[in-house]
Length: 308
Image (cartoon, rainbow, N blue to C red; front, side):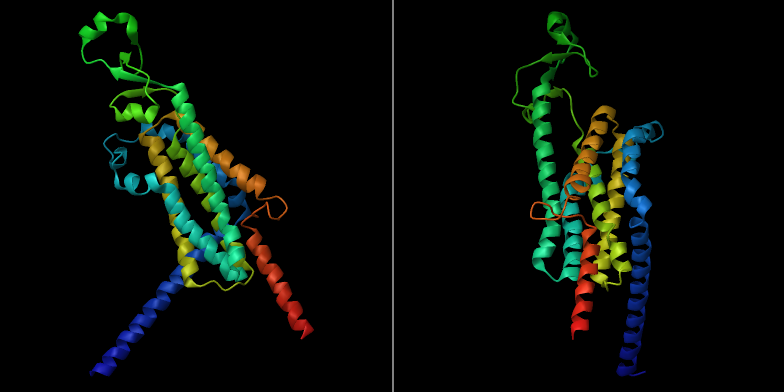
């Protein structure tokens, strides 16, 4: 066997493997896009997230405290949880931009659809600032007592809490300064992690669910767009998994429930309130508008052909 024959065999193997991988990609994306684009999923996915947040803490009765996901320093928490919005913006933003550009061939049109994520990011920043202000205003900073002699010495200055006797030290400038000083903060809190995870799940479901209807209208979509869709689907599954991990291993029922409710309200206000208004300069439009863009563009092409 000479060098040319070997090169031809390797080329055929590479070509066959590429076709097999592409067929698997098409099969997976078609199946998942059909599920995400189904009317039942689009209408009831938020109910699934609500049920998870509401009953997820019950899982703490069965999980082991020695589980690898019971450690806050776990790889998934460090890499994905603390940069949840960044991962969502990168993958979901790339998908939305590429899909809208493939349909409209207009940069302005693509940026308009992409600006939905910018508005959601602004809402998340506003949530964080308001919640931080409320937490600082409703809490107090405490210093743990080191010995029982101090407890007997100043019984009138003690405050009973879940962590034992605590002594109010001084007025700190917020929760961050208190924790930085090695003290303990007591007050009402809202789970930022559950809030952003719930919001990201709902946003991803809204943005990628339009992929199936776009394919059903006959628009040719290439492998890069299908890969981005698959990555967004996997990212949404990861956020749901992290929600279950947090609820099961670190149950803080009132604060996590409020965080999930705020995430739901943020999604409801944007995707079921503002974005369903009549399209205009003050309305960014729904993700479903991409399907209407395909229909209108097809109609324009047909009319041009008839005129010719």
